Length: 103
Length: 166
Image 1 (cartoon, chains in turn purple, yellow):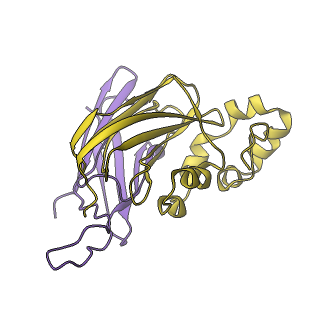
Image 2: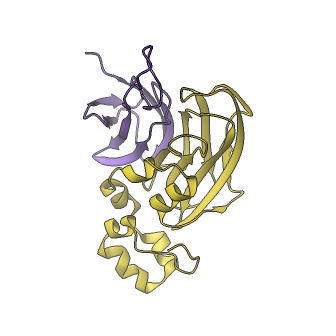
């Protein structure tokens, strides 16, 4: 299966801007399906970004993060060509990870 | 727990920072805010499950940080005046505060008020953009933890169609 994670990381001088899109339903548990039954909550809890084995950004998410979540941040100390490791885990034990080159 | 002179109540966060910070507390509060190890804390912190289940904004903040926030004009909270679709509301925050260790978003009218909590290790800029769901018109609260203190900014977002189902 193709990765659920899409990352665009661009180094500009010392600062690297990272934009991430993840494919995930992010079901809140408050929405009903056609038959009127609640769709159980299913959402990403932790999303981690690592550069050289060191976490540069950690997102803890609740049910209020939109479906197919997007997040943008920036950090210092990385160079063009470096690798950024991105991984997430959700409340049902699902997970995915990927390594992305900084452009 | 949350009086202003008691700046370092014994919280989960403090325990995780370990003996290093505790030793520094003895040396003076100012030093702690500069030299506590945000990287270490961020790496070790567990998912704050209880805080994410809270129905009340103040309770969630208390559980997460163990203190109350004071408003700051150094936080810039960007959100639309009117969100047509409450399921996808682009919200971003940036701040000129120094030593930022975390940023969080609280939507008080949502069934679970805490939306997202971002740990900012040293070297990461205190700017975050994301997209949140909003059940109805409310003031979004951005929380910024800076130098061991907690600051907040709020902005009202009018929601025409709620994003949390009926």
